[in-house]
Structures are given as structure tokens and as C-alpha cells.
Amino acid sequence: MKPLALFGGTFDPVHIGHLSVAWEASELLDAEVRLMPANVPPHRSPPTATAAQRVDMLRAALRGQPRLTLDTRELERSGPSYTVDTLEEVRREIGARPLVLLLGADAFAGLRSWHRWRELFNVSHIGVINRPGIDACIPVELERAVAARRTDDAGVIHAQPAGRLIELAVTPLEVSATRIRELLAAGRDPRYLLPAGLFDDPALLAPYRVTPAT
Ligand code: ATP
Image (tube, rainbow, N blue to C red; front, side, top):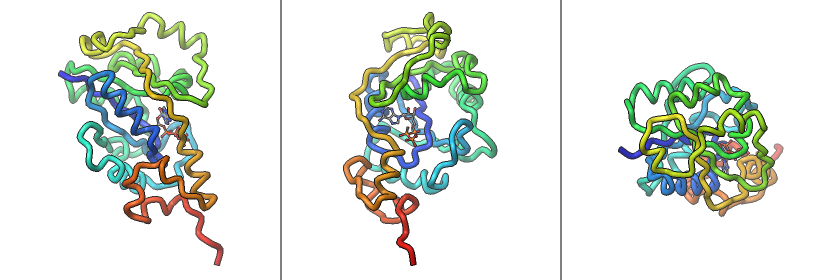
């Protein structure tokens, strides 16, 4: 059975960096990839758009292709959504099917601050996606903790349910939601940094636009 890969994030808003790396990760791992927006990110300031607005943007962005889907389970849960709790829940649903948590290199570098981070490997593999323009030095202690788990063979990920770490070399795209929010707030129109579907309805990007003073 194809691995299931979960790509979590704030998606405030979803941008072409997210979609392109998720798509390529799905090709490299031959996996089903689900984008999974977070409700109350435990280690981040609150998103600009509401959960419902971020889901509307994701739905618009994912329209018209079969490979990437949406998983809103963390938004349906109250309280902080710790990744390890989510992965344990997914593991109970999927039996022995391989599960992969996809993380950008910046997110992976901060893994040791995550709730019960070592236990992630009991239920999931981790796929680390390279990300340009961001200082994502892996701390020595993190590297020491994960070194024995490393593989560069997607076949190993298919062959066991959890426990390994794989680096996924995707096309580098230096795009961030922070930059896109700045551009929109400045009255700019970052048309080609965002999926085309986000321009179908002006209400989708309204949370980021400054309303003129009255
Ligand atoms: P922000 O700028 O608001 O921090 P972001 O662009 O980093 O947002 P998130 O929703 O926080 O987007 O990211 C979700 C996941 O996607 C994280 O694991 C992050 O590392 C990864 N990611 C986001 N943009 C890229 C990119 N351009 N290339 C590779 N990975 C990315």
C-alpha cells in the first residue's frame, strides 16, 4: 500500500511553495499526500486568517488535481493540536500502512521543541523537504538523535510503517506566507506566488488586504 504523507502547517495562506513541494514529495515517495492545516499552532503566533478562511483557500488551491488532498482533523479538535497526538490518531486508523510526516527543513531544525518529539518516530517516518533562503541548521543534538534513522531509499519507507528519516530533494522555491502577507498588506498583488484558484473569489484573500481608512 502507498504510504500516507501528512504535510502540516498554518497555510496562512497556502502558496505555490507548499503545493510544489507537496507534489514533488508525493512523486519521490510514491505517496498519497494530505495537507493538514493546524488550528492552534503550539509554537507560533496566531494566524491572520481564521481556520475557516484558511480551509476555503486550501480547497480553492487544491481544486482540479487528484494527488493532493485536504485533512481538516486538527481544526475539528479543540485546544492545541500537537502533531504527535494527531499522528497517533492517524496510526490507529491506518493499521500498518507507512505514515510520513513531511516537514520543511526549517520546521525540522526546531523539532526538539515539539511536544513528545522522540515519540513521533514510534508512529511515523519523517520526510524533510529542503527549503532555500532559510537558516535551517540541524542542531548537533538533533542530528545525533536521528542519525541511525536516516535512509535515502524510498523503498525503506514503503517497507516499514514508521521510524525512519528521509531527505527529499525537491525543486527549491524561496516563497513564504510571511512574504505574501507583507505584499498583500502593502497593496501588492503576488499573483504568481499564489495558486490561481485563490484569485477566483476576491473574498479569499481579503483577510490579508488592508482596508482603506474611512
Ligand atoms: P510563514 O511564513 O507564515 O511562517 P510558511 O510559508 O513557512 O509560513 P507554513 O504554513 O508555516 O508556511 O509551512 C508549513 C510547512 O511548509 C512547514 O513545514 C514549512 O517548512 C513548509 N514550507 C513552507 N514554504 C516552503 C517552501 N517554499 N519550501 C519548502 N517548504 C516550505
